[in-house]
Length: 209
Ligand code: HEM
Image (cartoon, rainbow, N blue to C red):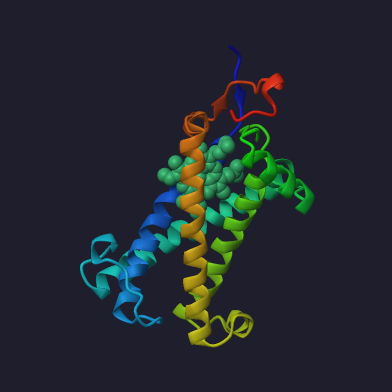
């Protein structure tokens, strides 16, 4: 059967490099956080951290940061230039989201890699926003004197740390929901590796794929 290219190569490359960078940044970030927690009583299990000691965790965090930033910029620029975001993530309206949440609760939401539903659109736009929020606040935590304008936008060093933590939390929450959705609709997984998917059957448009 003829298949359609649903995820171009640059999207797949971005996606898997980004997943690797995020795992390294979150795990090393937890080690750095544990060395100087912001919230009393909140510490991350050492077994889930990366880097043997604080200096090692910082090295992991900064190494993965370059992969994360360069990869994200290439994805955003290419996605805007090729119309990828305009075609696959917009438009999205509150009415469409409410409608699709209702369909999902009744087990009738279509999950089509050719055409993301409104819930997916909101999630993907949201996680891209969370990544930018974490990146900007991270730059302020790292070099607040050099990134004066960003420091002015985010606030003090302490505020930037809280914003950075909140961004990390949103990304982790996204990953939990994202992986649950992939587990519920496993047919979406292989196309994110190969790029190709079977044409979406029109008659099943209102049923979970
Ligand atoms: C091992 C972990 C992951 C798996 C198995 C996975 C799987 C997938 C799959 C199957 C899709 C395509 C969904 C569809 O066609 O309906 C997708 C899309 C996407 N995922 Fe993931 N994902 C993972 C980690 C992540 C992480 C860590 C992020 C970001 C923090 C992320 C962000 C995205 C985004 C933004 C898209 C939409 C890409 C686009 O079309 O431009 N994913 N993921």
